[in-house]
Length: 197
Image (cartoon, rainbow, N blue to C red; front, side, top):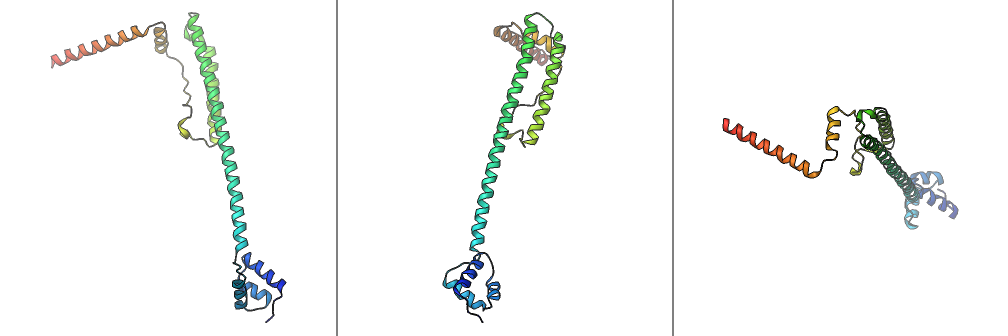
């Protein structure tokens, strides 16, 4: 059996730190496993120390990258939500501006068909763009509860148009009186139905 030099023992210690077994080191240097074991215990070298350090450094680097990615993703999600909120608010404002201008000019709401159709198509395109961006950025509809509601665009029925026209210029007092009259009529009907039974 060969006796190891100081330089060979330093090499053997480094190999042990890197994860080589005592058997592999003994075979490389032509000595007994017990000799390697005694030496490593004497100098207090632990097997795989370097591997553990490298592993810890790798884990720390991966964790930093994951956090960087998560922060960047969260920032993009917030930007997308704010951007689509602004676009939606603008579209809705334009739509109601058209309605107010038509009402002020005494025009029928059906006269808005060209503008309303263009706004409806723009809102539909915005909805599709929003859905695509939310899919790409993995934004869930219930994230933080601050998502915009789904955009629902439909043609206004004549009854809805009449209701909007009828509500124009009515005071709260008049609306309350109508509700009171409706409640009184319902109560009277209930009394009549109860008396017939």
